[in-house]
Length: 160
Image 1 (cartoon, rainbow, N blue to C red):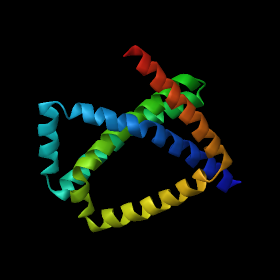
Image 2: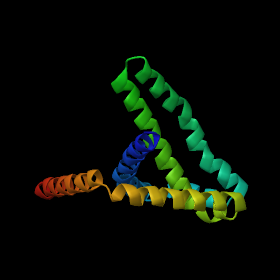
Image 3: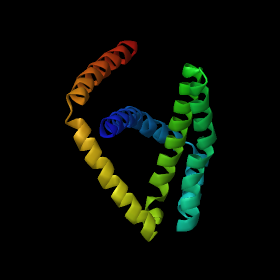
Image 4: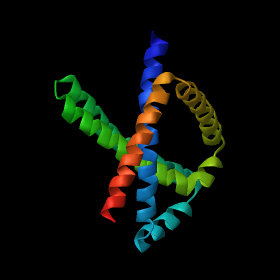
C-alpha cells in the first residue's frame, strides 16, 4: 500500500515537473535578455563553490514557510487557497533553484558530497521516472498532453 501511495505521489510530481520545465526554460531565456540579469548571473557564477551552494539553497529555504502555510490552509478547510499557495511556492522556488543550478552546476559538482548526492538522487529519480513512464496512466496522460499541445499551438497560430 505504501509503495502504491508513493508511486502515485511521484507520478504527480513528475507530471508537474514535465509540465512546468518548458515554461521555466522559456522564462529563463527571456530573463537573460536583460543586461542586469546577465551581470547578476555572471557574478553568481564567479563565486566559490561553498557560496554557490548557499545561494542555491536560499530559494528552497525561502519557500518552505509558504509551503507549510499552504498545507496548513488545506488542513483547515481552505483547500483551493492552500493548494494555490503551496503550488505557487513550489513553482517559484523550483524556478529559482533550477536557474541557480544551471548557472552554478560546475561549482556545485566540485563539492564531493554534493556531486555524490546529486548522482544518487538523479539515478533514483530516473528509475522512478522509467517506472512511471511505463504505466498505462502515464501513456494516457501523454496522449492527452499531446492533444492539448496541438490545440494550444493552433490557437497561437490563428492569432499571428
